[in-house]
Amino acid sequence: MDTVCSDCHKVLGPLKIAATCDMCNTLFCEKHSKQGPKNSKICRFCYIRLTKRKILKELSENPAALQKELSALKSSKSSSKHRLDKKLLSLKNLKCQLSVMKTYHKDLVKALKRKLESSQVSNKALEQVSSSLLKARSDISDCLGLRRKDLQESSEFLSNQVTEKLNLTQDLLKIRKLFEALLISSKTSVTYSRLQVLCCSKCLKKVKSEFRKQASGSALSSSSVSGKSSNHSLPDYPLESCKCFIS
Image 1 (cartoon, rainbow, N blue to C red):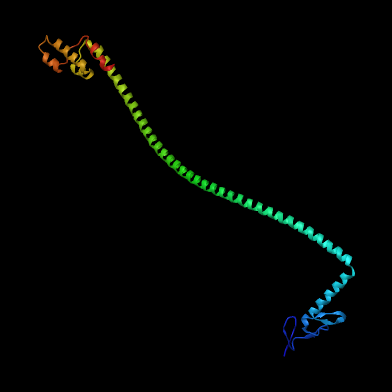
Image 2 (cartoon, rainbow, N blue to C red; image 1 turned 135 degrees about the horizontal axis):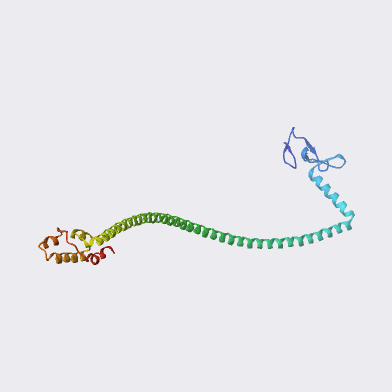
């Protein structure tokens, strides 16, 4: 029957070097054997028993020192317990502070999230307003372009009107000069066709009446009224009849 180590319970064979405890005669492997007194080999259990005996012997020789050390240990235990209680209380306070800080930071995170959402909504609104302003600016630019074009056309029209007015003024001056020449030469003779061009419709009736009055005494009254005869003179009438046309 193979022997086994009492400590590790491994089989002791030819490859495992066995050792016998000098105190209890138990087989042990070389790995679990200890050096005993006087270079003897003992097992681990006998080594523990010898160590206990040695410690008890040393302690029994000086009981006062042992008592002193025991009281010191009790005092140290009490102070350690007191420090431990303080540490536990501090830990409890820290846990409470941590809970409060967690709650505060949760609320702060929620507030920041709400603020972020509101800022995002505000940014969207600002983008919409910006796009609306850009569109309005484009519309205003188009409207200004149309108004500028209308203004240019109006300016051209006014310029044409001014030019036309100047031309009409020049024509009117020519007519005045012609009429003045007619007034100067009215003592000799004025043809009905020339007065028909220069007089208005109201004055033309008076002119026609005067021609009839002057032509009533002669045999050629019909030709003078129709405007074919142009050799009769009007002494003073054109001064009154045609000023309405050129004034």
